[in-house]
Image (cartoon, rainbow, N blue to C red):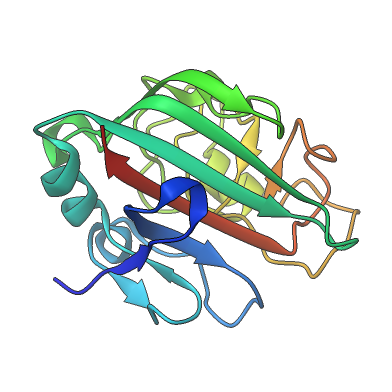
Length: 183
């Protein structure tokens, strides 16, 4: 497995598993596509749910989410505990211990299974992945949607790749990177 490592941010050692920066990669994909890796490690990509589960199933890991808006303001959210469940657990997200300056728009999703356009695991009346045009650990529906549409800074739709506590759910962020490391 080839991975992209960030050795500079916050003393380094981060394994990047998601990056959005120019809209070149389609993130509105199926369950099977999210199970595997897609994209390009040097640009936009998703590392794959099977890989994420395999890498986080033993040991203790922390998560860091890097966000940048269209005015080049950078913020981050860090979580002291992070793991992804197995396929049998629908790749459920576990996060806790927020710190940072972006606000916590991810703890709302902790304990939630992953939902894609063809596999609906959320607790909404409809499929949040279809409604929001993404794939995420949706509940009813979200406080963050980092696999939503990359809309190049538009502020008109809830389908945007967004972080609610940093400009709200209708603001399409310019740059997003999710990464984890052992603690």
